[in-house]
Length: 437
Image 1 (tube, rainbow, N blue to C red):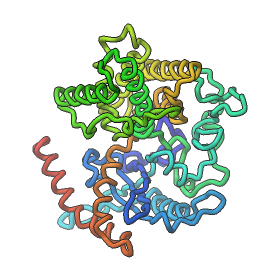
Image 2 (cartoon, one colour):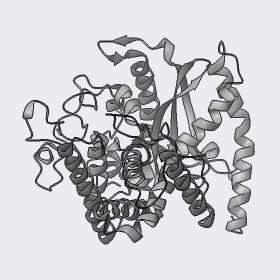
Image 3 (cartoon, rainbow, N blue to C red):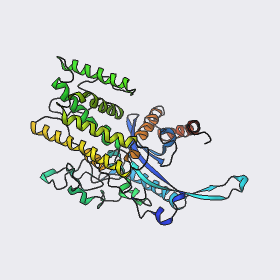
Image 4 (spheres, one colour):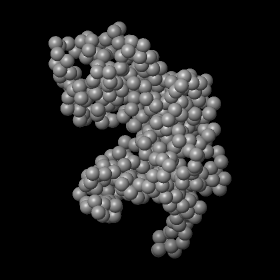
């Protein structure tokens, strides 16, 4: 990790053995007719990383109806981040004393320091917290570089350029994406690279949803894969096929059935799959399987889906934080192949006047994930928000059970009550796998 930050204080103070990395996350939960912003922290060394309730630690809960917005900046969140920054800086400078057992004298044996090494969250939340001037609503879209949408015919830094010599690479990490530095920039060791694109929202809930809906609109319209007189009959056969595939491969599937509404199938409208991130992953694997016998007809689509599936599977299957040189090269080569074919299909559809293969700014963040320029070769899987979203799902159910008048306090109290049980449960599971722990 420190390869990405050669001037980090941990390097200079030589306290690597007594320092822990942390990641901050933020997102909103719907309850009581409004939104509540949760800011969480996670230890990068947690042995319970796959248990959301035992590894995610809330810092604060802020009702969105109390936001103070001035000149497009969320002052309420800014005040919260300033306070959080001060706390983490104290932990970085002074640390926490680790004392020996009382029977051994109770002396301080170490001083554990904490440094924020990453930020997770969907683009909307990160945009709010860091009040980014470069974002998906503007012509300049990326916080890492100066990539643009190419408005007004200026394509010099268009994000659709996937080459290694694209114009925006010259601006990589050269300018911050904000005009006024947000509170988090005062964190000891802060660097723009710690704000990471999220695999879940960029791929599963981003590009994949457009690929799935456009692919289904093409194959259901052609009647090559699924035959039938009426569209509803073909959708029914597609539903039976994916449910059979999920059962055969023991994959959980929340999808009830394919419908026009589920695919946003309307005239002169780009289709988009309305489903969960995991359902999107299952759909992509299913489409790869059913289209394989029809590769002569749907060559580009087949190759594109295979490329996305193969590259994301490699990222998710590698249990380590960092990729090897060969793994990084494979992810980049295969992932960019998928992106190029996606843009090729989008260009062809635009030429033909078809509303298919919508290209959104998230495509550019996927480009950053595949064409990873961090010296450490970080595996962006570690910054995906699957477990954070799972935590919010659980805590959101509890949030709806408490009064809106005291929701902030009560939800934190109830969460604190569950900690001992969750930790004990995790330790039992850990001991069952590793006797003697």
